[in-house]
Amino acid sequence: MEIHIVEDVEAGARVVADVFERTLRAAEGSGAVLGLATGSSPVPAYAELIRRHREEGLSFAGARAFLLDEYVGLPAGHAQSYHRFIRENLTSHLDIADDDVVSPDGTAADPVAEAAAYDARIREAGGVDLQILGIGSNGHIAFNEPGSSLASRTRVVGLTRSTIEDNARYFDTAADVPVRALSQGLGTILEARRIVLTATGSSKAAAVAQLAEGAISARWPATVLQMHPAVTVVVDEAAASQLELKDYYRYARCLESESPVAVRG
Ligand code: PGA
Image 1 (cartoon, rainbow, N blue to C red):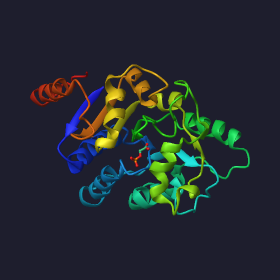
Image 2 (image 1 turned 90 degrees about the horizontal axis):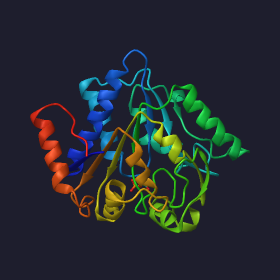
Image 3 (image 1 turned 90 degrees about the vertical axis):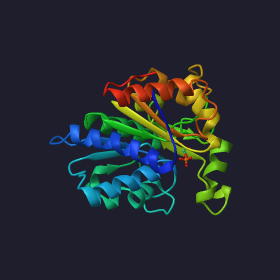
Image 4 (image 1 turned 180 degrees about the horizontal axis):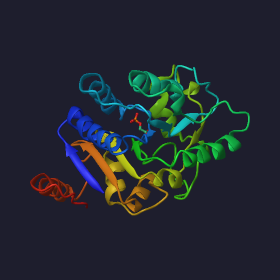
């Protein structure tokens, strides 16, 4: 795991955007497959990508994108649907074709079949080249709540009370937050070729410490990322505050800046 402890949100956004830019340039011609996340954590990085697209000509032409999850019961056009969130916060500002931005259908008559079809669509696209992730204060990634199988596939999940409370800020009341979602599984996410996870603030500190240094366990689903060979974690000081090996991570990044060889913890 490559852990970057950054000074502020803007510096973190630049590190995440750099990972996207490298992926897009490497896939030029064939079109990158991007795994996109909703929530507040990726938004600064999305703003930086939009800026690079507008001001520096970074192109997303030919890229395809798959969202991590969608609330069950919310139609695509609903103000709080993830289908809509990703368009408002990223893709409608880029040169990516709208039809190539795909999310699970939260209104599918058969959500179980929809989940299986979603995994198949990702596979048919050749798999995800780069997946961006946030992390819940309870250690979830996508909507894989504590107790999720570490090998899980896209499926219908029930949201925990803490996730519903965390997400209530987007709705009028907590009672309006859907209680189920279609979510990529941990096994699905692990198939992405590269992963970048970003988190800020002290409310994420315990989850970030578990992610990087805890025992791999369904109790903290993000710990499964320790099994992936190409994960970049971008955190501010507050989110990094419970990491025991902070000094080592800083040292490893310094070594990299002296020579362009990545030093992985
Ligand atoms: P946040 O959510 O980015 O809005 O903090 C992250 C998550 O719950 O996965």
